[in-house]
Length: 247
Length: 247
Image (cartoon, rainbow over all chains, first blue to last red; front, side):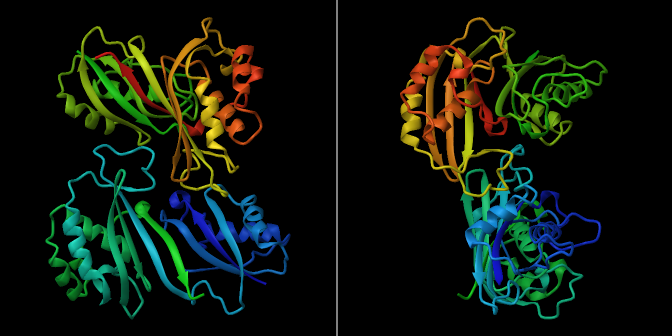
């Protein structure tokens, strides 16, 4: 049987999602919990929608795995959560078709980037939002964001050392919302390059604080050069929010 | 010069507010930061509105201290925050009259108690709200809360080993609000006994989940016996929210 799980994690104390020898990662924790559930020594391999970097959070990461166990679907989250550390929680489990694949089946993903603009850092969100205590012009940020929506070569918004050849991606929606202690960026696209959301967030924040003009984002895109865009915003403001599949 | 500061802290990694030898406490951290600011070896003694227990958070704790330094008031928070660990932040500093006293001058205090009612614990609030995934009847909790408002002997809602003689306190307001991921209790009173807010929260949660009838709270009060009331809710849901003084 193939099981799809929706998983949330606090990225603060993980060296990212993907297994790395000697490091605490989300994948290792879930695979060991599954091994214990299956009462076997070998890890149960899981496939995720994609990796998340060290410090990045997930509200709705999606994974799949195969299992011989016949546990009712509504019991899977409780069973796994009782074996997982408290910074990972399985929120939902669904039986899926053999054809489902958590990575290859992704149609689009939503990321969110949280920014706290309070003068002094809020101690309760210090690990969950980027502290940016500067006056921000949200209208300029929205104006610049409009230029990123659509199909573009995002080379300038991708970490320079990335090996992927095709850097064309589609952004379906990109908006900035006012929230209680600051701002939140919500971006949905068909796929994201390495550091792409963090570079978009960092660049739009620099536009909001007046370092760049909103129109300059067009030249940044056209340059196809990482050095043309703004800073990479820190990882702890970033959330993999939701992963979408064809039903 | 006498300085009043409003201070916020994340209680997760503190053994409470008050100095205890060999333990990490909020008071010790602030007193050492002040000593470094004053370039002296002895700690600068501070006086707080009252203690908070291990694990309890503060949104607006108030402290005062005396200083020979003449730093503009708006610079004090920045100067202190640069020397404090990131789970304590000074939000505001004001010069006050010699007659001001952070503890003896308290007119009333507001505490809040946060409850997350999601089925599976929210990883992002696991240290900042009590996870109580049960169906709660908020109307019954509000009905019971009404009986606690006013002047009462709160012996039943005070940790049994407390030495204070006079256990009469006044509750001015006590309300339960629906918030995004659960409920929040807001209580304001002239003073609170040891564990009083947590016992009130725990008892009202048990009323909400049907263990007790709202009317039973009257007998609990009348019993003047800790065993008559409900459970003490865990510390990590509790916040010292605001301290009020006469202007």
